Picture (tube, rainbow over the protein chains, first blue to last red):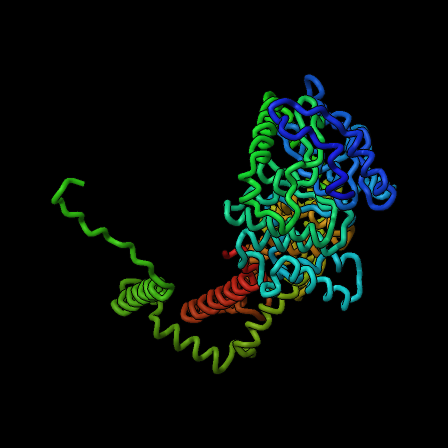
Amino acid sequence: MTVEGTSASMPPRGAWTSAPSVDRSSVTTETEGAEGAEGIKLDGISLTYNQRRSPVHALKGIDLDLASDDFVCVLGPSGCGKSSLLNIIAGYLEPTEGSVWIGGTEHIEPNAQVGVVFQHANLFPWLTIAKNIEFGVKMARLPREERKRRVDAYLELVGLSHAGSQLPHQLSGGMKQRAAIARTLATDPSIVLMDEPFSALDALTRESMQLHLRSIWQKTRKCIFFITHDVDEALLLGRRIVIMHPNPGCIVQDFMNPVFVPEGEVSFSDARAGKEFVELRRFLIAQIAVGSESGSEIENVSRSGADKRTALL
Amino acid sequence: MPVGAQRKPRKRKKTRGNAFYLGISAVSVGAVLTLWWIASRNAWVNPLFLPTPADVWYAFADIAKEGYKGSSLPAHIAASLRRIFIALAFIFVTAVPLGIICGRIRWIQAIFDPFVEFYRPLPPLAYYSLLVLWFGIQDTSKIVLLFLSGFAPLFIAAVHSSRRVPVDRFNGAKSLGAKGWRLYVYVIFPSCLPDLLTGLRTTVGITYATLVAAEMIAAVSGVGWMVLDASKYLRSDIIYAAIIIMGVIAILIDTALRLLIKRVSPWVES
């Protein structure tokens, strides 16, 4: 997939005051080629929580094709099922209907093929940063030399070569999150799921992390599925934007980001000041606001459901 | 603030180092020893109940030099510590894995829970007679008694700590490829370790108290037995000396455990 090739799926330029049509056919066409390799396909994903009075539909009929080098940012109001969808892709939650396919194989249980970066770095506090990064590689039973090579390479990739021997509690929030990204990438997953990974960071660290992530993606070209509440973040990072609405959780917009900034060409601050960026941001905020009503009920249900499923082995 | 008004200099709270608080503790201990010395010297209390600190010191020096009833003081201390450490080793290798597994798999917990819950509140000495009947009066019965008294607290600590492993940590490990026994060894056990060592502190306290009581009932060596034996001859100076030895050993064991906790889980401190 090339950036030039995305124009077919973009909403028309300068028309951000009106809703662009949901045109997923072009996106699907573009990603079909990758499906056979390491592409990810969500096929009719639905999730229903059985409540006493009536079932709550957290997700309904989610179809999504992701190319092996996609950077997809998912936006939506609270309770629209973003995190539930991520949990299903990760294998933490079982969908009521539908399935997740990775490289032609159904993905059912969590494994190293699908990496996850959480809101909080979630590093193992008893291991040094280097050992944290080595963890997944060790679980894959790779030889010691290969483990060391990967640890060094990923420490360098995230700019933490100097901090390999430190424990997580000795690092700042941003450094921890970079270590978490390195740990996930070191296992060479087909897709990296990120659940609001920078939301707990201060504004400056967050921007620095966004730049880091963009740089990492440019170098690794891993498929990234990035959940965020921050419209700016989605527009700066995502090559593709997906918007979800609640009741039931579904995808209402799926388009290639027309203001996607290729690395090195424009700075994030310049990109933010662009007229098209501002208009698109306004449009997306309005889109999210449309779906923001009555989302809280599903959010509460989905959280309790996810906790129950993952609390025990 | 009105013009011309002067701001009162704010009192800054002083931050004091550990030495300050250690100093207070030393003064407190010194005050009690002084009170003891004054009370015993002026015979406010019958010397049979309260010997002077000097008498206790001489009794201690005598035991340390000559031993007690045919065995040296280190031999009595070693006899007590041997019992407690063998029991603690058995407790650790059984209560920890079983507690962790029970914390993660409810049906296994359901098998063991009724038995643990039944015997946990029982005073260990209540079933000591049974153990003596089964295992004799030698060390085995004492070690089994210590094992039973210390198993439940560590088991319960293990169950609760394994349940409290953060869901994200657990899921994250699975997404890094950990599964089966590796999940237990590399993720759950280290996650539980700070809680387990805290539980071990409680366990050591309980087993130590039980040990002394068991030695008082049936033994021919050990610090607890020294107390019982000395009481038969109304040697309160030896009783006091033995009690102080027990207290010091307990403090040393607890300090070692606290240092271990600090070493293996420095992130908990911060």
